[in-house]
Picture 1 (tube, rainbow, N blue to C red):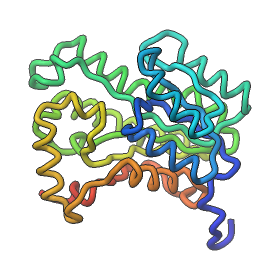
Picture 2 (picture 1 turned 90 degrees about the vertical axis):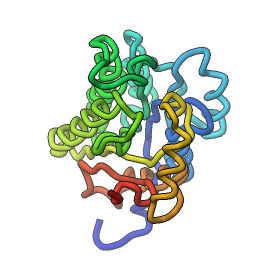
Picture 3 (picture 1 turned 120 degrees about the vertical axis):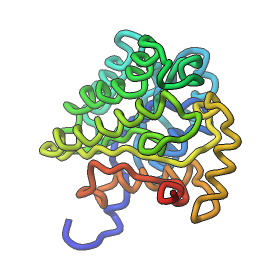
Picture 4 (picture 1 turned 180 degrees about the vertical axis):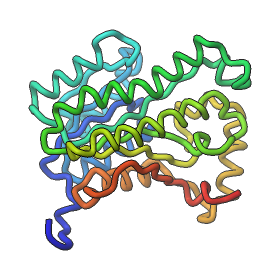
Length: 261
């Protein structure tokens, strides 16, 4: 690509997978919608049959060509998802991972007091599942690609009540950097995306979340916080050829909250 071309920002003809849509308030859905509007063909996952009625209408609206369950704790489901992509498309250009979990009793307690089992489960679901996802996606990215995962500022600084998820997200961001280094020779870019606080289903498990939202909005230089469409627009850019030389970033989309002391 020589010089500037508006076509570099398009995702037309690209194939992408989005894991972690829970409902129409999900960050993953905001990203999927932006990918689709930019021209990409999509594969979407849903957690289980309980979640399916909330996600299936969204998949239909997005024209998702592949729609399968992926519970990262269930043996074989992630592999089956990527096998379906291989059979249908034979290749993949980008994947977004928006999956996190910690047991409530560990999330609401001190990091000092978290259980071994709770810590291990939070790390497996929230961090190692991204690594596994990359392993399945790599062989399909024959012409390069991009991998994304969702983090939060609590990975960098102490955010009151974020508790166990702080160390877990810190590990996730570090894993993204190391994978950016390892996969770079294949033309595969890896990013952690760090939105500010948003009223999503995942955020509802954090204690006193309304106070966190209020403080963040009041303290942000923009005096407002990002929404799922803001995140989607930024991630769609990173998935495009226009961002082909950007990798290993933790991208903050938070109205500037992260720059404030």
